[in-house]
Amino acid sequence: MRTIYYITKMPPDLQRFGKELKESIIILPLLEIKTLLDCAVLEKFFSCDSLIFTSKNAIFALKKNLESLPNAVEAMQRWRNLPSFTLGSGCNEALKSLNLKPFFSASRAYGEEFARELIPHLQGKKPLFIRAHKIASKLPQILASAGISLQQSILYETSPRQLQESQKEPLTRDCVIFFSAPSHIRAFLLNFAWDSSFIALCIGETTQKCARELLGAEAEILLSPKVSKEAALEFARTL
Image (tube, rainbow, N blue to C red; front, side):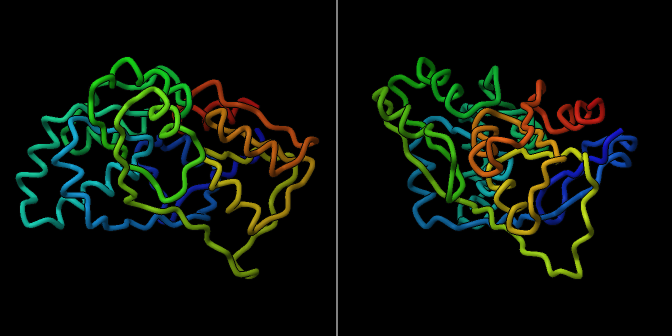
């Protein structure tokens, strides 16, 4: 089996990974997630009639923002009554951890296809998209072009960690490097040079497209047939 490197945040979230999977991967915590406070989140939250999440980080960032409000209990109760539209199993697991359920979950974990799936469900609605400071997909533009009155609240940002040379171990040749977002590729390249023997395994077409742009035409880049991180890493073990 090839060595598998998992690019993730600091500290890594491995709760859903089985023991065997944990022991078969090497963690490279090259990102930090910072929650942002939106002073207008109260007004946006109480004027919307549905929520859109494309990352579990967005769910936890919204929770933190709502808990900071004077009427936190009322806000959390309102959340229970709002339909949540989600992208990916990570979002669904995050909602479950808060005793919430998705109203609609994407059939495929790709941002732009998700946006098109949402259009018939959101006609005439006022959704609130909880998002990162920087996003790779064109979800807001696609929904806006369909005439949907979309609000957005930027509640978190992903920042790369630059390791000291003393913190870096040489990467194994012929390894698999797992990227679940474009920001993970940029964080990797901030710390390591790409080697022609590496295999990039990506979740989502947006991440795969970014990998092609940043790693070069000669890089071996695979799209995971599974959309969850756990399943993608299990697939990596078969390569």
